[in-house]
Amino acid sequence: MVLSNVEIVKALESGVFKINGLLARDPSERPFNASAVDLRLGNEIVIPKCDHPIQLDLRRGGIARFWAQNSEKLKIREDNPFSLTPNRFVLANTLETVEFPIHPEGRQCYSARIEGKSSLARCGILVHFTAPTIHAGYGGPITLEMINLGTVDFLLIPGMAICQLIIEEVKGSPTEAPNQFKGQINAVGEVPPEEPAKA
Image (cartoon, rainbow, N blue to C red; front, side, top):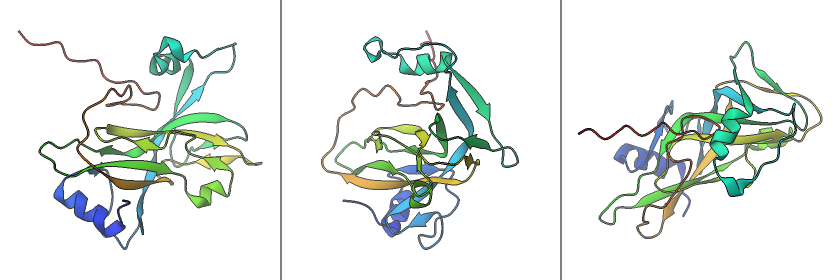
């Protein structure tokens, strides 16, 4: 079941999930839509390198490490946006972070989907490909896999509404499952190293 804007605000107020950095809590105002909430673009663009031959082989794992070693990170500002040219692929994060905890004792859990915005789609901008799912148990920023399928350059400006988050109830109580990007701190998917156990 998809949550309405009113139910999203109720859930945020009760603390069953979090959208950190959300600017408003009135469901009748932006960034809320009737059944979604807009998220904003962060201030870093990750540009995969294309100056030497690369072959991706996911059997080897380590996709976050691979992109960390084979991409350029670029900070953007409102007065210095990034021009996404036609057919160019980049990674970025949402400015907001989310937390969809798995609650014990049968308390309702939630997951979400990232969808594009029609205003960007009509410019030929895809903000994700085939990975819109934010699983129950995930916490962190949301990585956006973006490409310009349009015919003209498109400016990516930090803080712009870049996608919409659609939140759904999860039927039943899920169990924790592996997720290589859980706790990611940047758009390539790196997670901070675990603290060594104290003696």
